[in-house]
Image: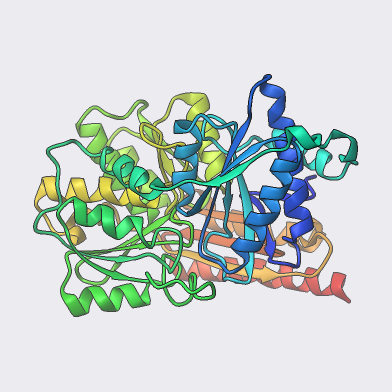
Length: 451
């Protein structure tokens, strides 16, 4: 069991769970662990999104790293995938992103990347947790060996150039009207600029962060503003990023949403035709729609499913040689280019396919008809309601009812005290009934524990 790390780093209420003291100790613990790589001057890059609490956490992390003799390179507001990329390109031992992704501004988080730009393994996070809870006083650096810190300029331009270079040199976006929603988050400068440099006519929303408005009625988890703007401006496509720009949601010219499953389907089909898939299939999670699996199967491609979390998708991709994977939520991983989900790069790859086909986004991106999928959340205060006998019985009954033509997935959230119940199948009424039965059972079990 992990005490601090969830499925995507450490996350919680700023100055509640994510306190300066915790951030300080994370910096010290991670710094000490990565200094074991050799006897040289060790460096860490720190990026952040636009939350007010980012200043506090950045300063505390900086103090932690420098107190154990590690030099700190401060990047400022920059997307999570940019931190991963810069960790590698700047030859650093460690990369840190301060962000709670799509959560509201009150929350924040700490994501760690190794020198290869990949998120840390569960084992490494457990080692850091052990150090966080230990007495590090005697392992702090002496006065002469403390680390230094400096702010790095031009990191945004470097990331923009990196994102553009994922496209062939002859590809541009001339003639495309694009609305980009940056969620008032980490991508608010780089995403519009990259699209403009590629020749698109760009209209931007969610690009006025004030420390409090990240993800507020904008971004990939609140696409209504983008849908309205696409229709109002008669744009060819809308692109919505989340708070740290590692996930993307597309809106077609008709104002219809295109989720990560459809995006993976588009890219998988294109890459298969071009001979670019490294394996005959892609990697997704247990939450991806059964329609995607059937669509891929019709092309002779497989769909491997992992636990929820882009880190688990990536781990399987690396272990088995896949170069395309992702999540329905819009974390799209293209390992030929990136070491983590990258909303901007995924959007650019999709726009390149749209441009090459010369068809509207609505035609290109409607690869398959998704099966009816119902997702409901049950909040609980304590205990383990999924271990209750009545819940286990309801889940078994639901799976038997859906049979081979459907799926029932029940899982606890990795970032909050919520149990997610997802069902899908060809018969929507049946799916709704099965999900409601399981939700009722979980709710009753959770209330009994609370009482």
